[in-house]
Length: 149
Image (cartoon, rainbow, N blue to C red; front, side):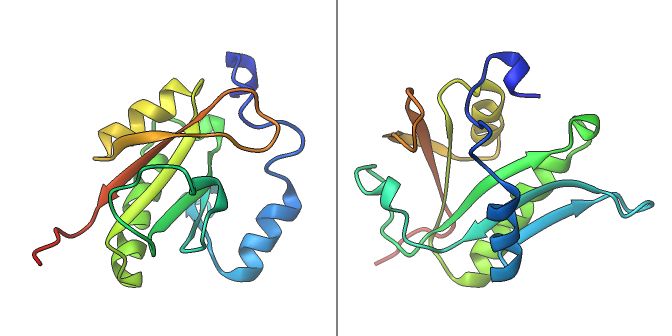
């Protein structure tokens, strides 16, 4: 997993089962399942919550915006399009919610995720710091509709 690749983005304190359980209770956790077995291959939370950690980040589009957090893909299912499916759901959900932009962040050491985010059409906008992690989190934004005003 990420820990073996020298990425300390997720420690034992985050994300916990309790955090995922709360996501499920609030109806914001999306899962990607194997069509044949029903096994969960990946999951992510998609919310429109105000994010205090994003306060100083120079996003181009004001809130409300949809944000995707805690994206995880089962290691054995990597390279099967699971992350791409979650990103597609993120965009569909953002459009359903009527927001003008999508936001996502990832730890500055997580180069694989950064490459994926950019490939999905997001633009890097700035950094933030979170929890007890020593390094910055890179924040990205994708505009869903052009402002024609």
